[in-house]
Every structure is written in C-alpha cells, then in structure tokens.
Length: 263
Length: 243
Ligand SMILES: Nc1ncnc2c1ncn2[C@@H]1O[C@H](COP(=O)(O)OP(=O)(O)OP(=O)(O)O)[C@@H](O)[C@H]1O
Ligand SMILES: [Mg+2]
Image (cartoon, rainbow over all chains, first blue to last red; front, side, top):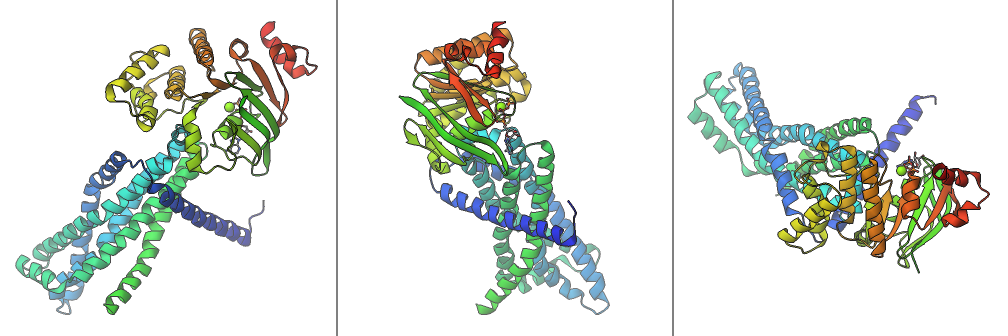
C-alpha cells in the first residue's frame, strides 16, 4: 500500500475514532455491570495497595524535586526585582493548582497505566481473560472496575501528599538557598493560599484518574495475540494517558477558573 | 432431545470466513467428536458455543434456549452450566493451583472452606495432581497445566463440557486417565464435545463424529456409518488408527 499524507491522516483519524468509541463502550459496560453483585472488595483493596502504596516513593520524590526546582528558579529569577517574598505564594499556588496533581498523574500514567495495559494484555494473550468469562465471571468486574476505582480513590490522596512534600521542598530551598526564614515562608504560604487553590487541583485528579485507568484498560483488552501486541498496547496506553492529562489539564484549569469567578 | 443444537452457523473475522454453514446437534449424555485439520476453526466453533466469539449468523440452542445474540450478562448464566477446557489450560498465573480450582467454587457456590478444600483434594487426586496445590502454573509442566485446566472446568460439575484437545501433549498414562474421566462423566449423563487430533481417544470416548472442512461439516455420524463414507479424508482419519 502506498502511504500518502492523506491516507496516513485517514488511518490516524480512524484509530482515534476507534479509541473514542471503545472508551465509550468500556465505560458503558462498567456502568452496566458495576452496580450488580458480586462486588469484589478484596480485589479493590489489592489494587489500592498496588497503585497507592507502591507508587508513593516515586510520587514523593517527584513532588519534592519539583518544589525545590521551582523555589530555586522563582527565587533566583525574582531576586533582581526584589520579588523574593513572593516565592512562597508562587510556589504554593503552582504546586496546589498544577504541579502536584499533574506530575503525580504523569508519574502514575507511566507506572500504573503501563502496568495495567501490559498485565491485561498478557492475560488476553494467555487466554486468562477468556477463562474468567468461561468460568461465568466478568472481566469488567474483576479486572477493569477495581483498577478504575483504585485510581479514583488513590490519585487525590497521592496528590495531597505531593502537595505537602512539594511545599516542604520549596521551603527547604527557600531557607538554605534563598535565605527566606522557615517561619516567614510558612506564614506566607498559609496567608496567601486559599482553599480554592487546593480544590482546583483536587478536582482535576478525578479526571486524571479516569484518563489513566480507562485508556490503559482499553488498550490492554485490545490485545489479541502475540506478546508484541502487549508492548504496543503498553506504549499506546502511556501516550494516550499522558496526552489526555496534559491537554485535559488546560481545559480543566480553564473550567475551574470560570467556576471560581462564578462563586 | 438435543442438548446442543447448531444450525447454519456462520462466523467470520473481518473479510475472512471461518464457518459458512455449520450444523450439528448433540443429544443428552452423548459425546461428539469434532475433527478437522489444523486451522479449520474447531476452537472458534467451541468458543462460539459459550459466547467467547460472537457469531455472525445462524442459530445455537442449548437446552432449547436460543443463545445467539445474548448479552454478556445473559451469557454468564449459560457459562455456569458449561465447562470449557481450554487448549492451553488458560490458568490464572497469579494464583496457585489450589486457588485456580477454588475460583469457580468461591464464585458460584456457598460451600465453606473445609468443603472447598475436600473437593479440591479429591479433584487433584482424580487428575493425578497430588502435591501440586501450592504451586503456581509457571512451576508446572505443560501437560500438568492442561490437567489443572481440565480439573478447573469440571469443578462445578457442569452438565455440558467442551474439551479442546484435552489429550494433546499428554503421555499415554495420563491420556488414558483423561479418557477414563471423560467416560465416567459421560456415564453420569454429561453431554460433551471433544475436539481432538488424537483418534484413539476420540474412538474410545465419542459416540459420533463431525468432520469440519472447507468451512462446513462435510460429514457426520457414528463410526459405523462413516466407515462406508466415500469421502477420502474421513477414511484417512479412520485408517490413521485402524492401520
Ligand atoms: N481472533 C481472531 N482473529 C482473526 N482470526 C482468527 C481469530 N481466531 C482465530 N482466527 C482464525 O480462525 C481460524 C481457525 O482457528 P482455530 O483456532 O479455531 O483453529 P483450530 O481448528 O482450532 O486449529 P488447531 O487444531 O490448530 O487448534 C484460523 O485460520 C485462525 O487464524
Ligand atoms: Mg484449536
């Protein structure tokens, strides 16, 4: 087949439509089956542990470094204009609104999203998903729903920890590199940040959780045969989740600003 | 009365037709041997009977209930009554042998821990799998995995069992064990379909045969009926063992 720019675009567009359609069907199946017994609480608990506890070190290191880098850059950049006292406020609101939730989600997309897609993909190849169905049980309930719920529960909590550690990182750099007193830094953060800063970031994490879990489950379930497809599915899952988080973040930020003005 | 009845069944993957017009039936307590070359769609046909593949036309009835067009939730009810022994075992590799066998019991019965344990010990014994309950599938040989898969498919004592090459890759001793097991279940009234290339086993346990070729069933009947068939392929299959 000859690939021309237009045929490549057509393939690309077709694939995106297929993705969107698949996501809609998957969510529909989850809603259809999710409210019927049995509920697999044990499987949900396993996933919360895997997604939450096991990702914690990665998330905290990311958040700490981000907070430190931001404090350093803001501090050095603003020093010339005598803007150092604004560092705590700038670091805090950027972390609460953007960096905390977004970086946590991106790390989870890489770690958890890839894990979900490759695990489900391997289960497809080895017919374990077929076996779940053949034994009169539902892979949507046993595999998909616990993973989506775990991400929805865990991501807001991880982001809250990331917010805290990110600000501590900023404070440390403030104290040791920028000569901003701990007490002063802390006071400024408390005085200048408001609950809306936190809620705007917090609200986004639920969307990001879906952006991670749903495409990863979808691509995992698309695997038909061959381990090669598992690799492809994993890559597609991580790319889709990351792009959805980054592009979605812009629109969600916009929406939250509109809501805030309104309130 | 036919327990499984397939009429004018069609199946394609995209533009590739696998089955054009497949019809057969199996009566209660019978075992049908489904025979055909590799890649003729035997596994696809078995999978369609429990809705793992969507059919593209025709009718499938199980206990006089039409199941083509069932939703996934409706299929769950059928699958509890039909055991499916996968060609490769399809064991859950994150679970031990014990947990694999306990899975259907935990999902569909009210048995307590002790009853489950007893049942599994008995089942492992029947399948020559003693002392494997705490092993993971990765620690078993291919033949053992296959037997665990069979054992799992039979845990709920289903009234219908679909066997996809249950003896392929097994040694003669275990092949004989599986044959005896299928016969024992048959004696209890279990209806089954056996897909196999292992003609001695097929002749030992099947009441009748259906030959799949060129996207349809080209011939079906008892061994006696088929011996007189003019179709050369069938004779080759039969002679493969008789000679
Ligand atoms: N998911 C699928 N998508 C596309 N084609 C498929 C799919 N599953 C099976 N096929 C095709 O259907 C045909 C029949 O496959 P099937 O596995 O049923 O063969 P079989 O008769 O069981 O062979 P064997 O004896 O080797 O197990 C094959 O040509 C295979 O390539
Ligand atoms: Mg096969």
